Length: 150
Image (cartoon, rainbow, N blue to C red; front, side, top):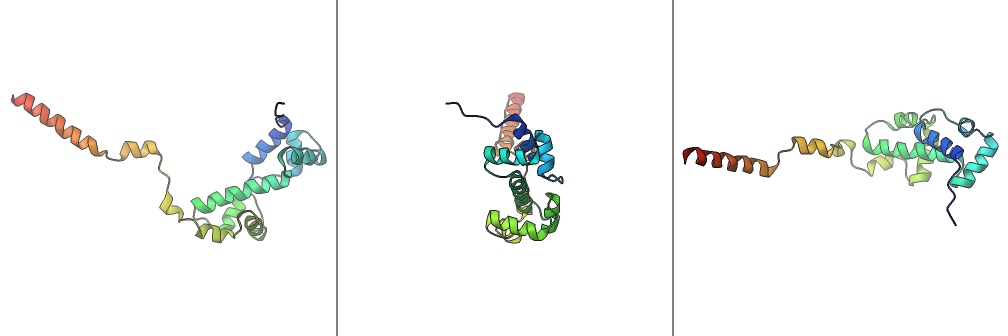
């Protein structure tokens, strides 16, 4: 029996929550994107994805906040507001439910952001000296010298 894929209208709302989690979205706005009434949308969304639209949006915001806590040195309050939440207290409570610790404890459990600055491999390859390059250049120069003197 083939696996049923979520209805396109529900995916449209889910994609909106993923892309614009920072914005003041609510169930009504997501329901409009799905072209359903808020009540019907909430039932269909929960049936399809296993959680309410509100919880899905909150989880995306908390996950993004966790990434910001790991990758930046911004304050917890600033991160809270950046991900679209309005109350640091509610943010801390929700974060604790998801990760089992406060945002401050979570940050302390990870190395400081400055120790893990991401440098793309292409940049490393372009700028880092390759040990065999100097040896090859020296060998080529010696070969040219021997040809010229020989």
